[in-house]
Length: 130
Image 1 (cartoon, helix red, strand yellow):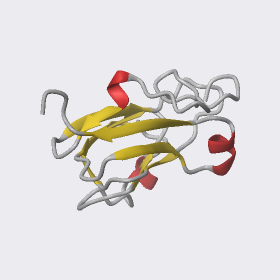
Image 2: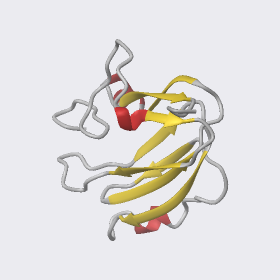
Image 3: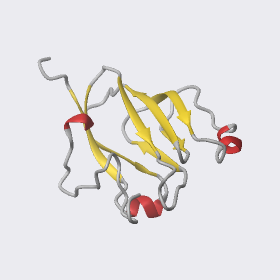
Image 4: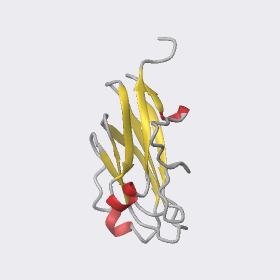
């Protein structure tokens, strides 16, 4: 969140279906996305991030400091996920392997954050050159 406007990777939601190059993922090929939640923000808080159209695995979780240690102890990252919680000060890396083509979205599952634009489109498509 930046000045009460929801952003992911410094980008807000684009109604026209805008998809950045790093949000275009090839079908059947694993890609690692990195999410960070800076603890320096005015209202540092956890964000449950949901990715539509694909299941994924959490491959690394780092940072977070003392503030979220008790909460972090209860987070289960094993197995396939469709949502993960990122605590203030954390960095989470997820391995995404799309199997279905299409235009999907990923977003914060806090309703007021989603409504504030903390969501983005992503496109899963055959590899270029395939």
